[in-house]
Length: 144
Image (cartoon, rainbow, N blue to C red; front, side):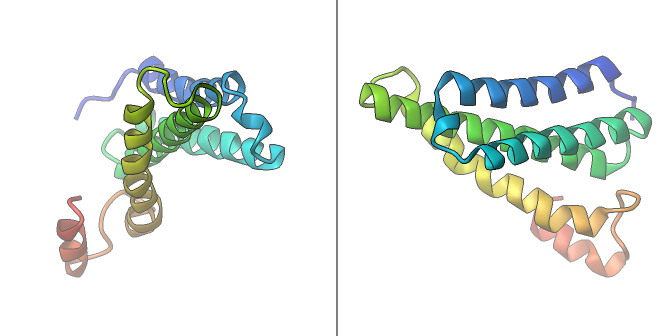
């Protein structure tokens, strides 16, 4: 597998963090969420994405880096689309374009992101491979 361009991978992390934070500020959803929670989610997105970008740019075959990038992107996209749909419903009675699409997107991105973080990361952690042959059925069942 070819190593991805580092600038593309890091740009994804920057877009995740700035996009998530920007949507929160622009839609004024940050005032409804506790400031410490918003800071924690932004930090989590930046750290997971940053560590994933470091791993991917060094060893592209390590699945852990890709899962961390996926988790960071899904969390940022999920919370951004949720903030947009809540802003549209609260201030414009749901008439902004893409409100239902944003709500639908927020509904289906939560589960894959959580599955990637809670199931696959501990299973693949140190080197990106399964701990043994007996774990293949878990990976097959969840499509890994």
